[in-house]
Length: 606
Image (tube, rainbow, N blue to C red; front, side):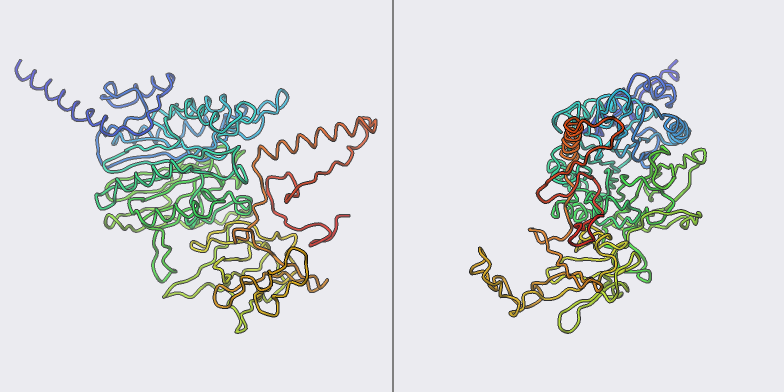
């Protein structure tokens, strides 16, 4: 009887040792599992599951303190009319997650946001967009809660798009947080011994200064993020895995979408130069950041450019200066949302020695493929190895961004770099084509280069593309020259009214000299000066937020209906011409790939 009692006592002690730490590892967000998911979770977990808390927020190390498994889902864009791919994808994930629960128990899922389809899912009934609505987030929470493991989510650029249901971003955000049972847009979850999952979510849509599809991390989250990094230094053995919808500037990822690059919504906080660069500065400063996962581009994971390592062999190129962080692009689950035909998710498997980055291929029965292996050499360094080469599928195309390489002490700049002549003038020595590769630095420090026939501004520090300066419609067939404009001979501004006393203002020589970027058409003889913005940047912030553009489209529609009635037009008659007048803007489109002004810098429309 005494032996039986001792055995029972041992079981109680074992349970206490395994379960008690839960309160010490509670994340900032403790959302609840939905009832339909709780039943399957408790029946499939190991024997100790009856002692687990019912929230999906507690971090309980079941068997191994070091091992962990995390599933990462890219942009879901759930459409209730097209659920087959989601159901198939989930069924492919369940055996992977079940195996991890049996092996070590430290398992979670992370969604990278953009949870709903950004169009009407009942077009015959309503024009209301599905993304960002209460219905959308309820459905997304049900889906994410059905994977039988805890989940976390970060907001993407479409997750506050409930424009017809909510008047403000704040009201939309409050609903989003409530439906996913999140106290804050960010999250922090301890998944294993001294291993954190940290997420940051977008909180701006209607109030966006420029495009609504910029992923904006607010100041409060940034302050919280920086304090979290300081509190978990690598010198104490901490490892942090970060999750955001879009990647940060400086990630080095090159599997990008052209529309994101040219419209200023490619990187986190893209349109704010200082805030945009803050993320990579934190990565460089805090080597506890071991990996950063993002989505946003709807492109596949088969390419090596979808993963970048923090260091490389000097024989392969200059030091990338990305701290201790591996950056990882994540694809999509549903076929209709993929931009290159791939349907894939990411899988992270890690322990105290390092981690694997894998692909779960939803077009191949959920097969798991190892893409890269990262081995820790010490608390501040690691070695990454790609597990396979890029595929060579026939007809496989994606937008691979040309990113200049400035070189370092051991490596010269790449062959596209153009230096200045002895007289301080720079020439792109050919008529621009789609294939032209060239880049240069302005005296003010700004960096420009050619990309698919476009003139693009690049970040001065990371050389990541920032946005469109001149579109291919206006530039192809012309030459580019950069010349000094602050020379004394050019100072005379004449007798123009309002310019009195401005002669030679701000003119000086030296490395910060004043310059002019000139496009010259050798056929027509026309020269066009590319003027900078007021803040000194050159890339064109010419797309407003979606709410403003939708209002403009509705005004056009109302005017068209008025004109039809005023002109007594029948249904068989063509729509009357309706035009708009703006200040600095030229259209209602949300993707700006053209910069030419018809009849001025490009031929007039016929």
